Image (tube, rainbow over all chains, first blue to last red; front, top):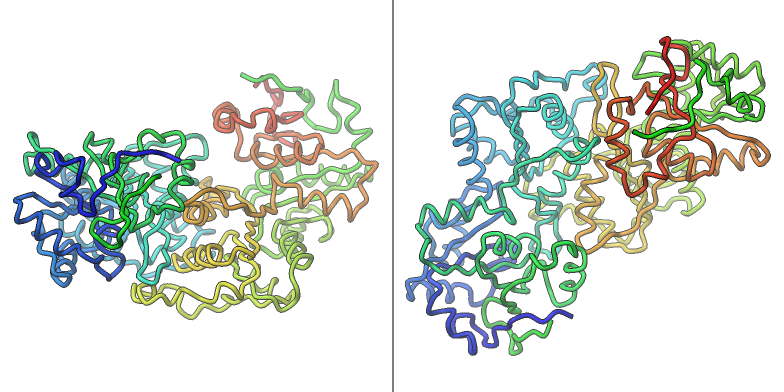
Length: 320
Length: 320
C-alpha cells in the first residue's frame, strides 16, 4: 500500500486542500487513450472539462505515444466528441520522430521504417527515401532467406525507425535487425515502447514496444546496443512543447494513466503529474505495476491520483 | 579472462592429459549448427569423426533446438555430407514438443501454433486440431483489429505453441497474446528461445526466441506469466534420450557452440560439456557473452573448450 498526495474533490481544478494548483497551472499536458477516451468512446465529462480549461485560458496539450495516425484524425475525433483543440496542440511520437529525422539526416537519405502506411508516407513526404514503402513481397518463402535476398546494402541506410505496424512480418523484423547489425553508423530509433494499446471491446493489442522487443532481443546477442526512444517516458515531446510554446514561466501538470510511461515522463521532465485510473492502471493492478518496476519505483510515483479525470462516481478519493 | 580445463590435442578422443574421456564416454551428445555444419557447409573432418566414434561403438545423438524441419531432412543432409546417422538419434525441440502435447492433451484438442508449415502439419497429423493451419487472411487491414475480429474463442484453445516462423505476422502475435491472456488454463509453450540462427553467408536471422520476446513483452504487462520451454537449456530433450536409450550407466559429453543454451543445457542435465568455437561463440565474444549472462556465469561455463571439434588449424589450444 502506497500513500500519495490526494486530490479530494471530484474535479482537479476545484480541488480542496490543493487549491494552489489551478491558480498556478497555466499549461496542462494531457494524454489521450485511457484519459480522454478509450478506443472510440469519450469518457464522460471530458468535453465540459476541456471547455472549462479553455475558459480559464489554460493551454491544453494532447501528448500521445501513437505514431500510426495523422494528427488531423485526432482533431476530427476530438471534434466529434465536442472537444475543441487546435492541431498544433496535439503532439505525437510519430510527429516528433519526423522532426528528429529532419534535424539529424540530410534530405533524400535512405531510411527503413517499420510502421503504418501513414507514418511511412509522412516520412517520404518529408523528403526521405523510405526504401520499404511499397513491399511487393511481404511474406516470401524460405528460399528468400536461404538465398540471402534479405541482405540489402545496409551501409546505404541512414536510419531504422521502429513503430507500431499492424502489417508487421518476419521479413520486416529480419531486415531491420540486419541493417542495424551491419551498419554501426545507422540511427536506431523507436517511436515508443508501449507494450500494448487498448481496444473499444476491453481487450488490448500488442504495441510498438512489444514488436520492438523482438528486434532488441535479436540485436542484443552480445550486450545492449543503444537506441533512441522518442515517446514517453523520454522527454523529446516535452522539449518540443517547451520550446515551441515558451513554457519557461509556466507550471505544467501531466495527466496520464500509465505509471511507466506517463508518470515517469512527467518525472523525467520535472513536472507535476496526475494519475487517473480510467486506463491501464487501476486500483487492482497499481501495486503489481509498482512491483514490476521496482528498480525505478521512486520515478514512477505520481504527484496526485484520481479515479477519473472528471466526475464519474461518488467516491473519487483513493487510499492507495 | 577465464581459465578452463583444456583439451590439448586436436581431436577430443585422443586428448592428451585427459585420456580418461574416451574410455568412459559411451554416449556423446552433439548439436548441429555451429558444431557439425554452418548452413549447408559441413565443417572439415566431421564425417571422419562420426565414423571413428561409430567404430568405437559410441552412440552419437544430434540434439537440435530447431522446430521447423522434418528430422528426415537432417538424415538426408547428414548423408549428403557422408555422415551416417539413424533418424532416431536425432532429437529436435519440435519433436519433443509434439511428445509433450501427446502426453498433456487429449486428441482433437484445439491448439494455436506459430511455426513452420511442417511443424503445424505434424501437430495436425498427431491428432490435434490446429486452428490456424490454413490462414486465408495473413495480413488483414486495420478494420480486422478495430472490429475485434482477432478475438476468437480463447476458452476453446488448449495450448499455444510458439516457434520459429518465417511467415510470422502481427496477426499471429496478437492472436497468441489474446488466447494466453484470456484463457488461464491454456498451455503456453515455446519450443526454444534461441535469439538467432546462422545462415551460410555468415549472417544470422532472428530465431524463435526473438519472436517469442514480442509475445512475452505484451503478456507480462503485470508480472511474469510462466511458460514451458522445451529446447535447450531446458532438459526435456535429454530426459527423452536418457529414458529411451537407457543412459543410466553411461558417461555423456555434450558438444555445443552456445554458452547460454548448449553449455547451460549440459550443466542443467548434470553432464560434461565441450564448447567448440566454430559457431556463435568465439575467442572475441566469449568474455562479453559471459558478462551478459553474469547472473548465471557459473552455470554457463563449459567443462572443456576447443577451437573446433576436429582438426582445422595448428593451434587448437585456448587460453581463455
